[in-house]
Length: 390
Image (cartoon, rainbow, N blue to C red; front, side, top):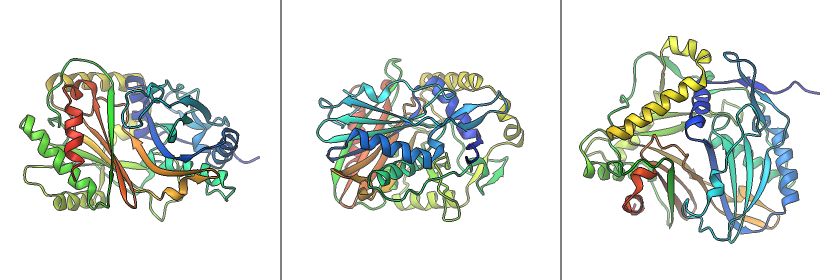
């Protein structure tokens, strides 16, 4: 028997453990939509095989405070079936199952495959953000589909974390300083917690989609208030020199969007930030973060969220993530062919807007997530309609 898989808990992962205390469930939700059917027994066998090949999908938090590690539990991620026949697939309305509670990080399983029966058939892969990012989730999913097609699995036993990446650490900020940012939908209305999302499916071929949406959203924010606009863009740090991994190897970069910014300028700034990226973490914090209890980090996050909602000024104006052009043929199995693959926004209402996008050869999905208190009076629909005009 081989050595049991285990890896360190990184700073980002500890933050996401803390976020789950405040914004539960704090999970990635990658949705595959398509035609046909999938046999639940075949899917179960494929999930078991893919998870054996990718033990990062079976990890739970173990060890003692200050020296905790992720440890392979050996338990296969669960498979659930829900009735989605009455759900449109184009908003969070009518899909309470997508926010079903998730096990504690020390219990598991922290990954789940949800078969949503309806027309079209949808499969939602939910992974706790503390153990996987979006790309790690896609790697695991692709192996599940390989297993259903009886193809060799790629697998991953990488123990690399974002703290191990070849990124310079600086005590000084290298990008725009977060804080004091305005919300693209204006001021809060009420105090209802949680987020909602809506989706647009648009046909065509698109270039510079993320920069164009960022500029449109920034211009809309300034219609409601004067102030700073900063967007965080997750950058995948996996390279040809890094073996496949299911872990959190995405690091966000902040891009400020002053008035007059063009999509081309935004794209240039994004490339520069990714190329020159540094982690703005002080030496003392890097040394002590394993000792900080997650309940204390969660209290700080909850308190900061309340202050931002009250003041109308946020750390960032939004987060924008782009899966890029997704080869849907990777997500096929006997009797099923994917037509769309998209990522739902996190349940994270300390960020005023959360935009995800993905595409195929001739279409794109754009999804906008907004805290409920910022979505009232059709503001979420108005903003998505605007950014869908790209």
